[in-house]
Amino acid sequence: MKKKIMIDTHCHFFSKTMFTSDIAKLVAGLRKNPFPFFRNSIDNRNERLVEKFLDIAYDKSPEQIYELMKKEYDCDFIAVPLMIDMMYTMEKPDDYKNSNDRNGYIRKIGKEFKKMTLDSQNRFLFWLGETVLPKGNLNLISNRSVNFFKNSFEVQLRELIALKKKMPDRVYPFFSIDPRREKTLKHGVLGEIKKYVGEGKPFIGLKIYTGLGYSPTHPVLFDGKKSVYAWCEKNRIPITAHYGETGFAHVLTDAKIEGDIYYPPSGDIIPMEEYSSDRVIRYEKNYMGNTDDMIMERQLMHNHPKLWEKVLERYPKLKINFAHMGGSEQLMAYSLGSKKAFWTAMILGLMEKYPNVYSDLSCFHYPSKNDFTLRDMYNKIYLKMSNKARRKVLYGSDFYMVLLFRPSLKGYIAEFRREFGEDFEKIAYNNPKKFLGL
Image (tube, rainbow, N blue to C red; front, side):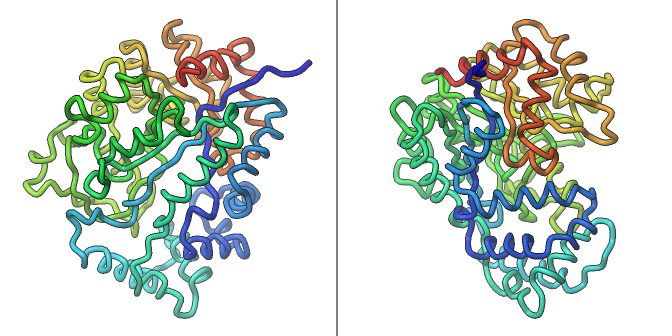
């Protein structure tokens, strides 16, 4: 019997062409001699998982990634690939950066590489400096203003538009743009969004990733009738926002922020002008330390649930998917009744309170000691949700990022089908169809 069509509401079609030649060379080095990294990596991830991940990142085009997913799913499916605007991941916006800031930081990284030892936090960086960039090639980092993601935006845009044109009823991409681009665009960020997103346009929705260095309440997104949120709410444009304390973040030591941030010592959100007179955050956790701590610090300050709650208080009908439902570690903590699970607890509360708040289960993996499974998630969390909230749970894979945690997409979908049973069609077709407005 032919399987019914399904919708993957969270995946990525990133290809090597979206990066500069420098990062392409870096990935090539990882592929040629990956095993020292695997042996020395902090979390001891399975070598084959990372190798497969790198093979896709380096060898597959967006169309080939789609075809690979279709083969693994063994059924017809709709993909929702998400862009990510990484323009300011390694570089500050021109309107407030000091031209020496970034070059100084790059030089600092170069010096740190040379002093690096094999301690528990810096093994990857040491290996990178000794193996991938040996014998003077540290100049790649130390003597040039290299932004590995410089071409990312334009290439992603071009590739996704071409794929949408080729597969109009099977690919529904989400556009992404950093609100700090406002002054660089003739018609501003909203003008750029209108150009690409909406009925008859190549993109169906918007992707927001505030951990890259901006607030969910950035004025371009948040303030007034001409804001991005106001336009999305009025036109029922779906938004997917990364949601949780892990993931990805910018690597700069400081950032100028507009809007509000979450301030951990107070346990609340505050306007940036109350945090700092020059509205600059100087982070305590940085790239040369523990990367996980660096990411968590930025996610807390720029992506905390209380910030999103403020967004929804002003735009209560906004259609938004908070991806990952907080993440697998949070879901496990929530199932145990832990107060640490505030990301998951707050998203479930927002799903109850607001009519168009959704959450996907993309990149579900077994945290810690594998003592929390998808069956636990289904029985201890999903089945205890109200019917209202269950109608807003979405299936997503986070392919091909999920390959860093799971051996195959085929096994991933098989587990979801098995554990969710009759409810699988709801999370993988009915709910996503409503969220996307198909």
